Each structure stands twice: as C-alpha cells, then as structure tokens.
Length: 367
Image (cartoon, rainbow, N blue to C red; front, side, top):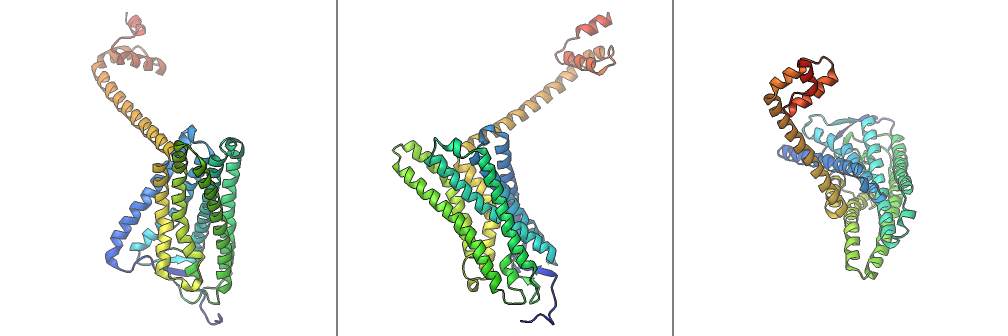
C-alpha cells in the first residue's frame, strides 16, 4: 500500500476495554482497587525487605526488585486505562504512545530476566547449599539485577527504533487499552511482516532463554529434592520454590500467547484479556503469593507489624500520660518555669513536673 496520498497520523484513539456504559463504573472501581493493592503490596514488600537486615540476601534482593518491576509495569498501564474509562476523548499522542510502549517493554522484559535469575538462585541454594555463600554473593546478585534492566532497555530500544521508522496512516484507532506493538502494527501503512519477524525473533529468544533457565533449574531442583531423605528438607525446598514456580507459570502463559504465536491468529479481544492478566493481575498477585508462601517473609512481616503496633501503643500511652500529668502538675510547672529563661533548663524543669516534684534547682532559687 502506498503512502503518497495517505495522511500521516500523530494522534491515536485507544478503544479501551469496553464500549458499554453500564460496565464503566464496575470496571473503574475493580481496577482502581487492584491498582491500589498492587502499589501498597509491592511497596510494602520492598519496605519490609529494606528494613529487615535478615532479608538482605540475594533471594530477597531479587524479590524486592521483582516487586519494583511489578509496580513499574502496573503504573505504566493502569493509570491511563483508568482515566480513559470515563474520558470522552481517549486520544494519546504519538510521543506519549511511544513512551508508554518503551516503559512497558523495559519492565516486562526485566521481569522475565528477574524470574530466570531467581530460578538460578534457588538452584544454587538447594542443590549446592554449602557453596551458596561463595557463588551467589550480593555482588553477583547486583550484576544480575543490572543485566536484567540493561536487557530490558536494549530490547525496548530495538522495538522502539523499528516502530519510529514506520508511518501510521491506515487508522488512528488502536484496539487496546494501552500502546502495544501488536495493535500498532495493525495500523501500519505498509506490510508489517518484517516487524512481526523481528518481534518473533527477539521476544521469542528472550522468552525461550528465560523459560529454559527456569525449566532446567527446577528440573535439577526436582531431582535433588526427590533424592533427599529428609521430609523437613523437602518441605522447605517446596516452600521456597513453590511461590516462584506459581509466579513463573502465571506470567509466561499470556506472554507466549501474545508474542510467540503466529500473527494471523491474533484476536483483539483475546489480546486484551491476556494483557489485562499480565499487566494488571500478575503485579497484584506476586506480593500475595510470595508473602503467603515464604515463611521468612511472613515472619518478617509479623515482626514489622508488631513493631509498628507497639510503637503506636507507646505513643498513645505516652501522650495520654503527659496530658494527664500536665493537667495535674500545672501549678508545679508554673512554679518551676518562672525561675528559668533558657530553653534547656526549662525542659529539665518540665521533666521534674511530669513526676510531680519541684526540681531541686527551683526549690533552691525559690528560697
């Protein structure tokens, strides 16, 4: 198709999830609650890991990074989706669309690499426990985290570059709730076969590599667990690996259907359902899965909540006591404070008043 008489598009319309007005309020409330839980859950998990020195080990550094990526991924897509549910004009400019797509690819790709790194970490921890502190150091963990984000950045850069050289002129309607590569290629003026091939090669290679890493790691782990004679060791291994396996299974399923199957089999509604699953639901499920399955996280969470409740109790208790003492000892305070003009002595005088006594210095001065 030639582009000589075609109008080059710089703005697009996102169709969103539904055209039915009766579904707008329920969908808005549902996704708003999910998004708030996602933010609170993931940021809470990051805070928990940050504040507990016992969790400053590679396994939980990976988990904290995964929570950060989930927050990033959800925040790239969900706020715009919520705004567009009630918006009369669902326009998005080409630059905004490219920024959203770039941010989405970085976070989604980084999550793939992080899940693979976490699988390798579990393989070392279970199959080579004595060598774990030597092999899986915090330094190696940081290197793997950096490589995960660099891999996401390079992958996003490749697809962003291929999209920016295209001309969009067939239609300005994107049948999706955010800017993704598949619906964008459907409004490309020329034949998008080369772009589909690039998408299949790069996205497919990343998914094959990361899925293979997970499969190989957990196959070796499974055989290692089966060879153990200790029931306690088997339970411990399954408790630490079960959460990760569940997260991997939930995340890769929709991605494989989205980006690896043939382009001709893509359906707009199916794509949106898959996209909702891994951009909205997976980020809210991950902190729940890991918090409930990993005993150390549960213990740390209980300790953290107990600490907060205890501090709040002491704060309230101190406030009430001070308020009562100030009322009871107002005359004593006034008697003491008139002898001091400087701030430190006045504070010392207040402390004396809280216990109901005139301090010795005040008594001496009054005499």
